Amino acid sequence: MISTENEKEITLYLISKKLYPQMLFEVKDHFISQISDLMETKNLNFQEAFLETKISWNNELEMVRADIFSFKKIARIEKNLLQKRFNKIMINSVFFAILSAIMYAISDTLFFYFQVTFLSVFALLLLSGFVFRKISFRDYQRISFHPLILRDIILGLVLFPLICYFSGNFNFWEPVFNQLIIFYTLTIQIQLLYFKTKKINVLV
Image (cartoon, rainbow, N blue to C red; front, side, top):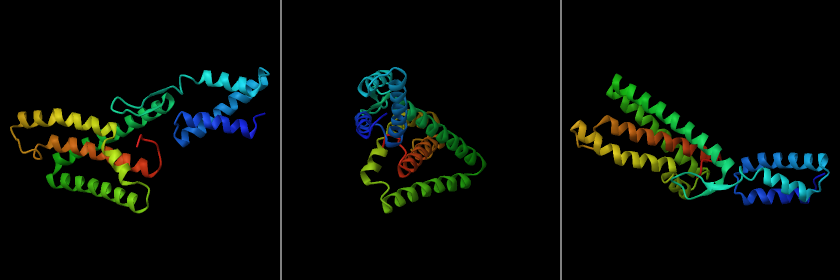
């Protein structure tokens, strides 16, 4: 039987692993279940079962760098979840960038209004986040230097000059590919803002 004090000890241990609240509660349930099972089946006391459980979770709870462009360290289990979330964000952004390109092929005007719509969504999300105190200016600064955004900045620094050179148009904003890359980055920012306002961990 796990006492209240035992449960607090488990919680403090998981807090030390800097797990996001949602992940912490989920892992805590697994810990309690595993410890209880070990105490019953192997006739161990709490400390022995707790130690065995920690050892079995050692790989998942090892502190690793969250991303190649991040200095923050998080538990490996959290990193795996974040990377899946990052991949989903990027896939969504690619989808909307392709949709934007289709809009451009159909009509310049349609393409313009499509971009304006997304800019409006971004502005509304940011404004509502500030007004309802779901996001602070510091959070917004962190989003601006999020690993996914940093990747896009590096991508842009490589591609923008190449696109301008091969298109023969050195007016930065005119090559449509430059606009699509910026639009791709905008859709990533929108998703990061949305997750932050919903208190879903995206490393912000």
